[in-house]
Length: 268
Image 1 (cartoon, rainbow, N blue to C red):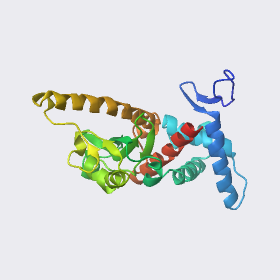
Image 2 (image 1 turned 90 degrees about the horizontal axis):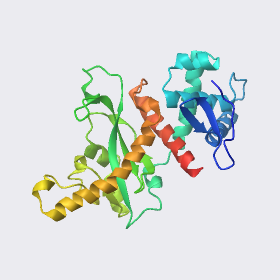
Image 3 (image 1 turned 180 degrees about the vertical axis):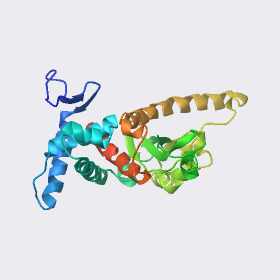
Image 4 (image 1 turned 120 degrees about the vertical axis):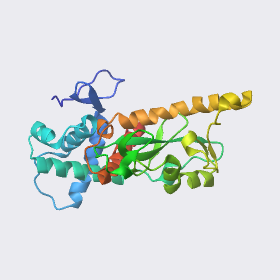
């Protein structure tokens, strides 16, 4: 593994190539390193095997490549228990910086619209654990609700709930429907959210049997919602969220940590 930085040109961002197929911005690693440094200063200072920068690299490799803790420990020259502690500490720091729902919607109001959808984070579970089994996706996982801007920029990721939870139930439980109604924000959602009411708009059923203007509405609705797939693509670009091996409780922390990393990337 090569951790040296390089400049491709004066216009391109510096990257930290820790893997030939997965690079992260150098500025992002530095930013998170300062957050870890601040956390270390809050606690009793002591000598650590890895500095803040390499600790962040270790965690980003874990999130990007979904490598096991023993593999990371061998690669970075530390114990597996130390690796677990580094990962837990960094994830907690990042998750604490993730914006809440109302904070994420700040600046949006009447005349704006957002895209809401749910995604399933696959997990390793036996068939008997029914609450985690999604009948829609036919596999075990955790349901995460995503709010994206009209251009596909992710605004907010919810906490993870068992995969059996329906999208509409999850959206109401997380307060998405009420928060958008209060701000008079139009919500574009798929058929799984039919019956939500408020400012939520879903496509018509059996649109081919409906008048032409119903069909045109569905086409326009699908075209606008297609941009929301970018938010899912960015979330799943972190391979640990394609099939998580951690506990179901830990998935929520990982999602919030990834949200902070995405937010930092956009602000940078």
